[in-house]
Length: 114
Image (cartoon, rainbow, N blue to C red; front, side, top):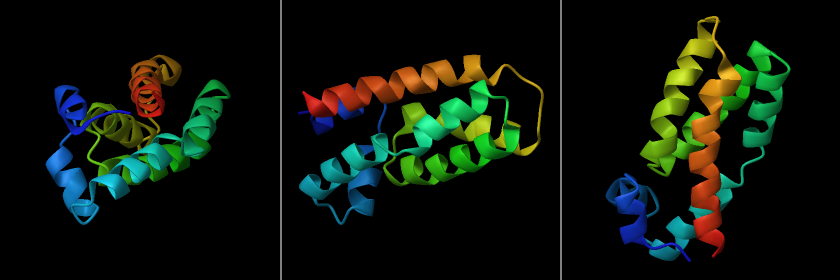
């Protein structure tokens, strides 16, 4: 199981995340697992692959809220930037932009399961 120290080393603002979870570590870790397992990640990836900007924006926006509440800066920051690009319907290679977000999410999810 991942620790607060490991999260801090990855750039997670654990103090803020814990505050949002009533300073209950067990609850925070449970919410972390749920947030990283959110189905919007798969929806976002599929929408980006299908070049469906509207659906991708909806999924990214939903994830931005979930991930922001957990203070997962390594995922939140690039996700928030991508969300704003999608909102503006800016032309970009979103599949490539999403790869490091997915890699960070997958890494954290794996660490939570170990």
